[in-house]
Image (cartoon, rainbow, N blue to C red; front, side):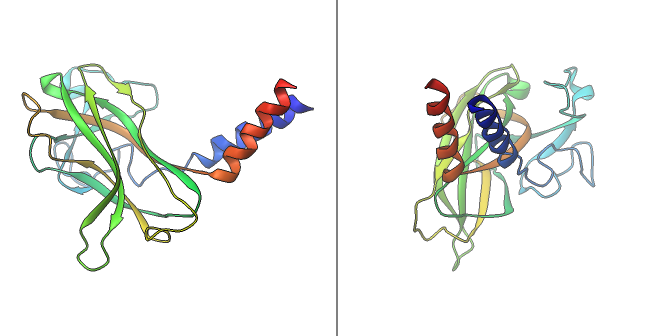
Length: 199
């Protein structure tokens, strides 16, 4: 019975983690290859794995990936349809590699828009050093509280800029970008299930 309860809660948590961004898999673009990425901007482009002598990193990643230069002022972002809820942990993550140069640093950010200027306001930022191997890295996270100016605002995620100190091109390739909400109540249920299982 306890094992069944734990399994049910685990499946519930997996279900809560399925909120994907629009075109996060970089497969649906009106101009390809090497055009912009639909639903993402203002920078970045899409490219087919086949044109770069590299297979898709994992089964199910599709035919295309995204790229941008993280060394200068380029950013690639999306204002999602999700809004910040109270007491919720959000994670923005994906698959990354160093691209043509084989190394670089990508900055993952979660934030929202300034209501007066429309500028991006970062709530959480994480820099990740990548090499020439595709990998799923731990994403940037942000945990809301019971109150906060961001609550109710659309969640804006982006691959940030400002890596001028990174040597080389800092050419970043990416795929399967996701934004995952995990309500605190579900996390507490999962922890409770683990306690029951240990007893």
